[in-house]
Length: 437
Image (tube, rainbow, N blue to C red; front, side, top):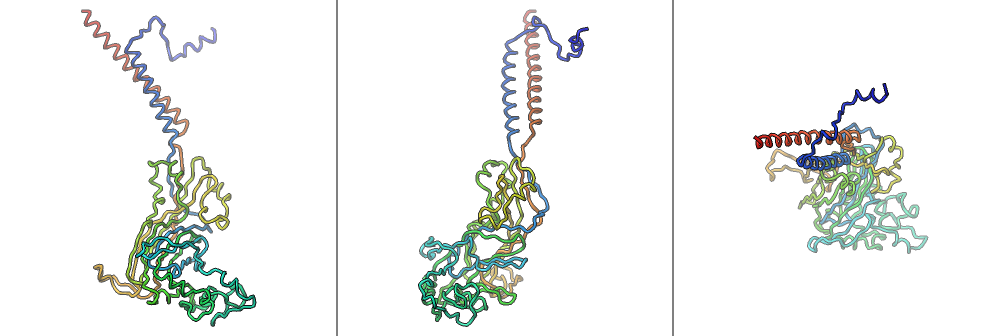
C-alpha cells in the first residue's frame, strides 16, 4: 500500500467535492462580517500583548550603608535669610550644621511689597573678598575664643565669618557683631538691618544617611553645648530686629528623585495608581503663626520604592554597577543606566506648639498640655520603613498567550459564523419550500 494511503485514514478534515458545494449571498455576507470581526479581535489581542503593566511587590529592604537625598523648597516670608540655618543629624551620630553644599537661598521682598524674589545666592553670606585687601601681616582678633581650625590664617580671625565660627566653637552667642572690627569693616550690622523685613526661600537638596534622623530650619548659628544642640537666638528674638515668626510654605519636599515625566507617560494613566509618591503629601503646605517662640514638627515615615523597566533582569546585576552616592552629583542619585529608578515615598503627620507651654484650651482641648522650652523653627523627623516597594514593568501576556488568543479568536469566530450561515441557509430553504406548496 502506498505511503500516502496510510495517512488518508487519519484525515480528520474530510472534504466535499466542488460540485456538492453551494455558495449563497447570505454566506458571502457572513464571511465578510466574520473576517472583519476576526481582524478586529486579533488587533485587540495584539494591543493587549503590547500593553505594559506595572506589577507591585512588597519585600523586606535589605539595603545596608545606603544614603538618600532630600530635596526641599520652602518659603519663610517673615524671616530674613541671614537668620536661617539648616542642620541635619541622625542616630548614627553624624551631624551637618549650617548645610551649604547643594542649598541656595532666595531673598524675598517684604510681604507688604509682594514677597517677590530679589536675590539668589548660596547659604554662605560671608565671602573672602573683604579679607583679600588686607595687609599680609594682618592678624585679626577672635575676641576671646581661640581661632577655629577652618580660618584662612592660623591663629587669626580675619573676617566676620571667622569670628562667628570662633564664637560657635565655644558655644558663645555672637549677636549682631557690634564692637567687632571685622564685622564693622564688612558692614555686617548694616546688612542685617537691611534684611530685617525681608523673607527667605530655601531650595535645593542634600544627602543623608538612610537611618532615623531629622533636619530642621531654625534661627541663628547652631553649635553643640555638651550633648545639647542649641542655636544663637539673640538676633531672632531681638525686638530691634523686628518681629520674626516661622510662618512658612512648603512648596515641595521629596525624598529621592522624582518620577520623570517621560516614564509616567510611558506607563500610562491607567497604571498610575502606584505612583502616588509622585504626589508628595507635604507639597503646597502652609502654616502660619504670630508667635515668635513657636515650633512646627513633621514626623515622616519614608518607604523605599524602586521602579524596574521592562526587560530589567536582577537587582544584583545592577547594584554592583551603580556608582557610590558620594561620587554622584546631587539630583542624579537613584537613576540607573538601564532606566531603573531608586526613590522613596512617604507619609507624614504634623504637630505644632508654643515654646511658652500651656494648653490647647483655645482650640477646645484643655486636657492637652505642652511642655515649655525648645528651639523655634521647623523640624522634620524621618523614620525609615523596613519594607520596600518594587514596581516592575511586565507584559500583560506572553507571546505564547498571544498566539493562543489569536487561534481562539479565529476558530471561535469561524465556528459561530458557520452556525449562523447554516441557520440562515436552512431557514431560507424552508421558506422556499413553503412557497412552492
